[in-house]
Amino acid sequence: MKQTVISYLKFAGAGLIASAADNLTYFIINHLGIADTWALLAARVISLIVNFFLLKTAVFQHSKRNDSFLRYILLVIFSTTIIYFLLQWVKPRLPGLDPVFIKMGLEFIMNFFNYAVSRFFVFDDRKAGQNHEA
Image (cartoon, rainbow, N blue to C red; front, side, top):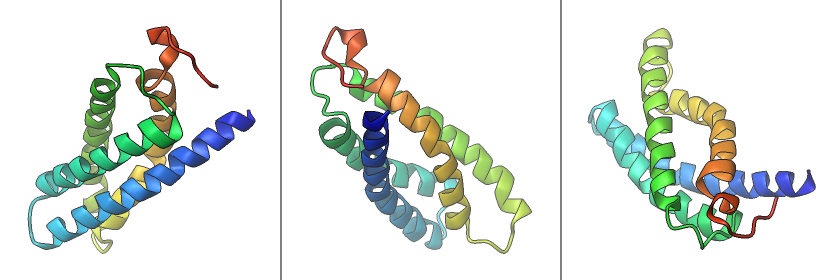
């Protein structure tokens, strides 16, 4: 249990760093008048690069699994799709709230799901026959 808490705190820290890059990118692009779709995708690319590197090296200390990046990309695509549709659903219901704050709230909720999938699907060395720390 203690290892899980420590692992999650590292995951959250990496997420905060990647989220800062993500939200700053989204904020700038969105306020330039570019559509949510492009702002979200550009922000996600920046976040993806930062977050994958941090998760692989600092959180899960993973270096053996060859398909981790592909699995991570699949998680990012799924998560981004969910966030996009939720953002489109919530924005009209909160017209006075800046979309970046709506996005940040949605990202916070998805964070718990993403941790579980990262730990047990993306970076789980047991499936690749490698050592695994719980």
